[in-house]
Image (cartoon, rainbow, N blue to C red):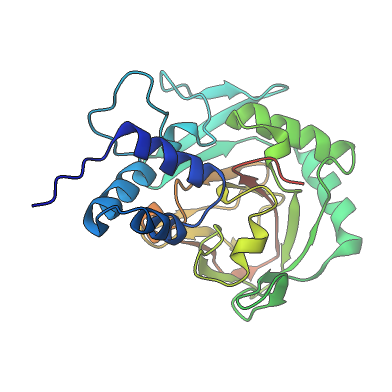
Length: 283
């Protein structure tokens, strides 16, 4: 009979590995190599990464889900302060962890971002599956560009607002990505975390660890179409200028229920700015 017990020390070690961006399968392999029974090791990994920690002792580590980016929504406020402006709370969900914000950006900020990004747009790419870097993918038919973090005044102002709103250090974020979707353009459902199974992931997470959350900000309102869909929960967020949708993922796994995509633009065009947040400082 198996007598191994999931100890606070083991949980603490799993949390440390997660914070360091080590893929779950490598954590599992290390536990097995150290003599842990496979069933016990798998249960410990699932409990900690899912935030289900039973019999937690005083002083034991805070589980990852409690240290993810998260707006201050205690008391169910209709508005929260984001450091320099009030932001409306339009919708919240627990599974997936998702919040729709109203008025995160002003009309003027939306136009300024679009104007700064437009000369630098090129065909959007996705993370390469077999090597470092990125590649063109038929599932993504937008144009896009990346700003460096705090590259200019508008980026620095928005990044500071996001850091305040989501209680997450500005240095733990990638630079803003601006995307333009022409009529008919779309982004098929996908996950934003780096897939541990891909050969490119290990090198990518050396810079800041895993992605843990996404914020999509709408820079205009298309005439028709272009919503952000979450197929696992049957949700579609309308792309309204100045609004944003935020969602986080405690582990790089479909159980996060963060599968999402950009519906085809049926009329007009859609512009968005995306902010991805990492576990550690992104350099």
